[in-house]
Amino acid sequence: MDRPDYAVLFVCTGNICRSPTAHGVFLKQVHEAGLQRRVRVDSAGTHGYHVGDPPDARSQHHAARRGYDLSELRARRVEEDDFARHDLILAMDQGHLALLTQRCPPELRHKLHAFTRWCQRHSTNEVPDPYYGDARGFEHVLDLVEDGCAGLLAHVREQLR
Image 1 (cartoon, rainbow, N blue to C red):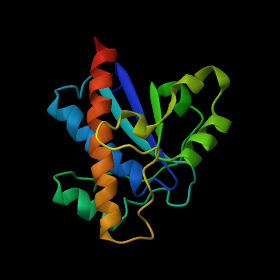
Image 2: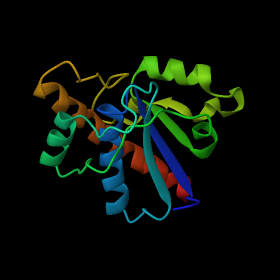
Image 3: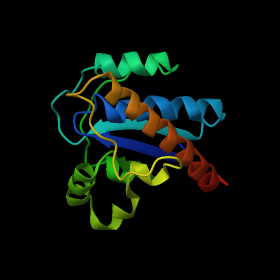
Image 4: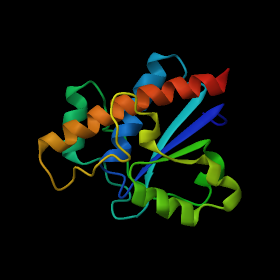
């Protein structure tokens, strides 16, 4: 897909847990809605700790149990051209949002938002990092991400009208 009508970028720290989970969930929702030719989905990290690595095995395991395949995704770092190439850049927590705001050209900052802005059932301002926790943390991330992606899909549909 060279020039999508709409492009969304999910961002977390290393791009191995939260943002690839959101990437996989939203990509499946986009495909199920028949919008795969119009919407590009991507993810990246604020830091380059894991560039080239697949998502964390626990993220992949829990996502697969809910029908999401993250196996083809590879971690990358947010690049300067991401700010221009994406219509929405969604930070998984407030620290990511602050880092993105510092790096983003002022005229493009309107694209930056907290991912949880689109949550409909959960009331929180960030998706917690499950990396150092147990299985419950990865399941909680999926609960938040499924909720937020559903709201996000409705927003994207409105933008495409």
